[in-house]
Length: 148
Length: 67
Image 1 (spheres, rainbow over the protein chains, first blue to last red):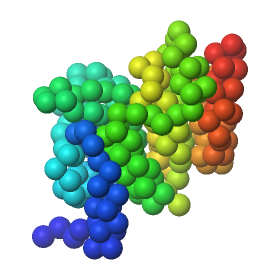
Image 2: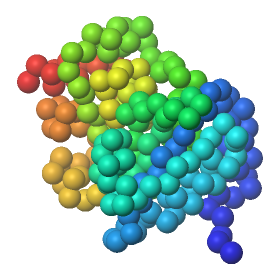
Image 3: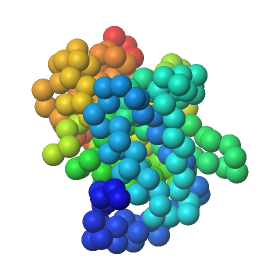
Image 4: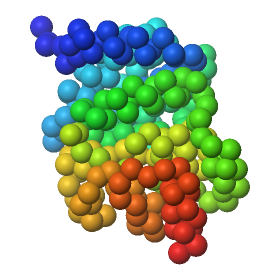
């Protein structure tokens, strides 16, 4: 049997904040067979998290075998994660992605993102919303982080 | 640093990817990642190091769009 990644204390904390979940959220996981050191752990981590609420689901894909789906969600790295909304059978992509294992500090970012997407509201300042509403061209933000 | 993800949720034109720098050393080297979090705007049109308040990230995006 596989060892759990999340201990009881963390599970209890996450369950508690998941009380704030509203609408369904779908996590799309993209792995890769060759040369992906963290794919297995990342998938297990995602599975353990989504198991904590019936508002969360996960779909598992492979970067190579499901190349067209990866392209659709603009995932080009493994492990790759997309945090999307789900409405019935429809997956709503917001362009929210992770590349690499969301461990350490990024684990809390992931939990926050699930709640954020579940609420379907960015919570941004009115000024920021106004600026974003006026955008005419695409913006790609790549945030480089380390686990500690 | 969920701010970038908030912006992605807000706007269909914004995509935000959080990248574990040590797992993707080539990409990190290409964008000269030294301190984290580092936010790279449109593949290098703008760069911002450290956790930034909303207004600051907006300013940097505006600058990057003009460059």
